[in-house]
Length: 149
Image 1: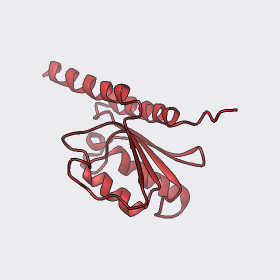
Image 2: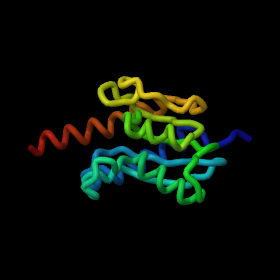
Image 3: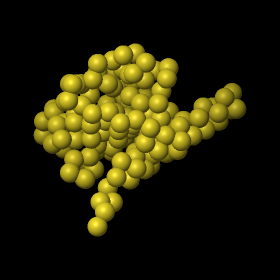
Image 4: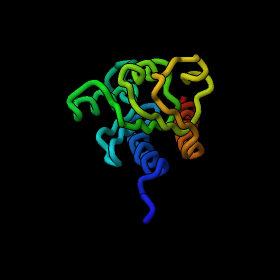
């Protein structure tokens, strides 16, 4: 039997988190952290809610996963996030030593690749998983924001 726990499966879970952010009028980015096909952390952007520029989905997920595991390192874990991490989140991922990062939409202006942020040498990166769906949600958010102003 084929493993139902694919990158697409977990990215859909991250998209559910992004929708929660959208409903809170937050930039709709969602994240989940997985170990052994089990979600151990779910998070979404909370920068407006918490009035905290560091409250990105990834940062919230790192904290939650570390708490769940009882330690600061996220070895053998995979982060699924709907948008390519920024350099702050990429830098934090370096320190977590996370095994893998899978992201949806590319962020050509603020993403870690544009800024050439170093990742942990053992971290595997996969981009473009459900890219259209992830990108469409962010686009919809900003179109609606512009139309309200």
